[in-house]
Image (cartoon, rainbow, N blue to C red; front, side, top):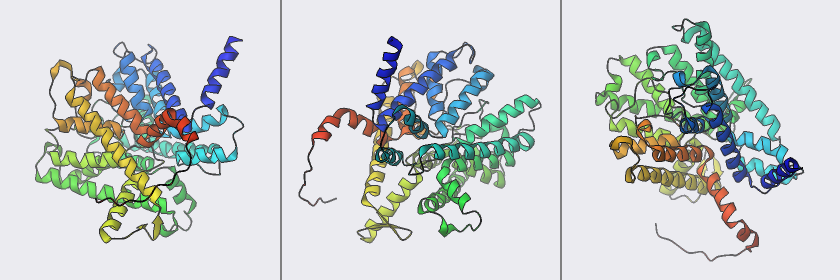
Length: 467
């Protein structure tokens, strides 16, 4: 009887949650169980305690890649498999999975409610969550499998042990497609810096995971008569913006590091510098892999600024990455262009963009920026470093953006933080993966739901404001 009462209480608790609140609660539950699994002797060595497992589980579920342990040495093969499953869960979309599960928890919901949930998550419509998630899983399985096969037969050929090579190919394909940045090697991909094939495979896996299932599905459905203009506006904007950011970021990074003679390009020829620039630019957009250690003495301040900008923009909606998203960035740029031209409406590709979308883009950008700055301020104004080591504000800001945008670039600061400092990064990873607006919506519903239900429609007079 008591067990049945407990089940009913849990069910009633979930029924009262809004979609944002349900997503947050479910994410915390997954992280909790992930922590228990990674901290068990079956998954890790004695070096991995509860805290190390908690940090790693959060980083895995949020597909960030920041870690305070050595994945290849501190986790057993079972622990690495569990970590890969966490990457798949977080990368394929924590929001998609939780909404899929909510269909079983909350029964008897009306069609209108189901459609509202789909719109809230910005990924699902009338077609239903089940079929959409199935299509996402199949697409991911095909791409990850192709990446694993290429890496096994042509990429990681220096690994002589077949079992080790198979697992390395599978794990890194999963990590790359999910834009996670986790590697079985502490030096990430440094040993494959001169391997053109490995770099290209990772670039394509990261980009395909970052653009999102919606774009891939749109291109696939129009494959027989593929024309750019036949794609949806969303797909065209994502492809165009992704291409623009990769080209501009690669050129900028290549130019700054070459002119400033940074250590990052030391002993590389022109072609190797070009490939390395493209790889770092693509990886900076929430993947987190690197083929050379990132630090103040290896990359110029300008190069770090390029990487920080790319990290903050991030991947695309529905993709496996974080950041404010490419569509948010392009919406802000279009609004800026309209303002400079004195136009009343925001037009993108001969399409009128609603004021609601522009306001949402502004809210996401401002909220994300303020949250990142708050993280950096907490790190810089509190005693968060072990042995009282000192770091510049640029290093702290870089790490905070890396955590919030779920990138995973580590400039050498993460392991030097105490538990409070690392908790700030944990909070940043979780909020960044879920989205700042989703978090604020959950908090707002919890605090003001009763007031909203009683609130009447009130009209306010218009007023001018000089800006």
